[in-house]
Image (cartoon, rainbow over all chains, first blue to last red; front, top):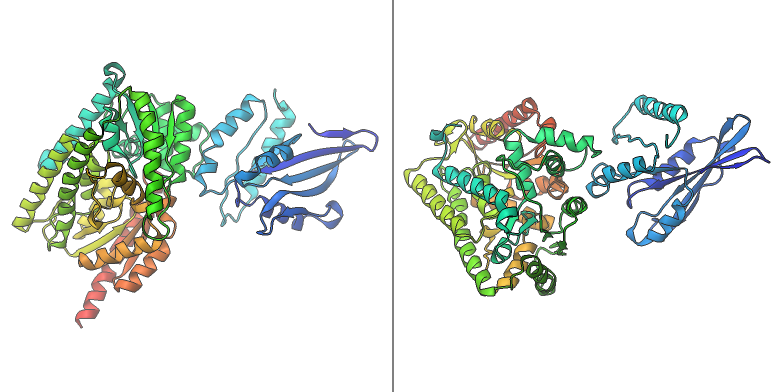
Length: 161
Length: 424
């Protein structure tokens, strides 16, 4: 659940990128960090190993405007994808408001989990959506529309309804 | 296809497959245990020595595709949440399961008593069986078979796989079937396998002749069918290979070519080596794109995914578990890229090929990873022109007839131009 601090009128949301090693979770955060105006973002904190793979998590705070007078602060995290870091993943996932499951399109072992993940999310009343794009996808308008529709459906019917 | 355009061996094989599916349908009543396993590294002789019946999920998928059933199965799997991008064999199998688990020949498939993975070069296989285990809640044995990174199996790797067969698999087979491991029966099965493997190699190597009496890709996927699936080490398997060899030797003695969708291919303009699995949804249309142009395939790597017998490997009744370990390790897609290049270059030379073609399938990373460097290296070593075409195993959406035909036609023209240049 998002944390709402009424005193300072802030809503904190935690989004966690989850998925197998080398699927681009850290790259995704780095890209978002590079695109967001300086005043809206904090420093991108990465705890990486010597091989530059994520060891614990990446963390990116974002301020994305106001909702009914409350500032929204998004905390974007990644988890290490390597099998070894099971407990770290569970710890980072704890208290997440949203999860982005990322997998490369050639990575069958990860993608084949999709029906199970979706069924699990549906059983728990968590809305979910899938986006599919390739390296050479030039036009992203359809993804904006998909995301907008998804957001509208949550606003209209709410999660778990 | 009318009976006149089919070889006797094809008809025999069709009967064997139909009988096997009927027996599988009766398994819940007859009490015969059922082991699901995959073609690469399959331990059929051992499974059969416990009187258990093998089911090969990827064979079900390709057979479903050849009968035009794969697209609705894939759609069913995608409706259940599977991505468009994952292996179409898996989706075809999952969709078949969701649609009542009816086999390609229309019989019902039994549930597995054991899921046995004896090849770990394909992570998708591992995940596939995880999905089936979730569905059936049945025992699973996953062997770890090391990749042949250095191009050969080390004594340690051999001992490692043998140990897993002896200590993990055999006790589980004993528990599931209620039978004791009988090494004499296994030896008998392995002896029958070795004899059939001799026959198969003679058939495949008949393509060294000109004209070739076989098509070593489209035709040979039928030839390897029984030995790659449920029939290796069985008496009917032995009979099939003896009959097949006789049929091919008879054709060779007449100087005749193989039967193809364009009729008997006696006049052969292009001799090709092909790498990669075929497409199954348009199998005969695809074959016709070659046979209409007078192209015959003289050697292929796909026909080695269930064993590299022409490189000398034989199942050995004198060393039963050791030779099964060698078999698991030596499957084509468990070999390193340099070993694959070596094999392809050898084929181009031994079979006097005019060209070398890669058919890359979207589904199979085990095959596709590294195919472009393979193409360049084989071209460099042999000097014959290579070409690259793409489609998929059992998902018809990725089979584009017009593109493939154009690509192949220009490739054949290129071979013509090379010949004209060489003759000038």
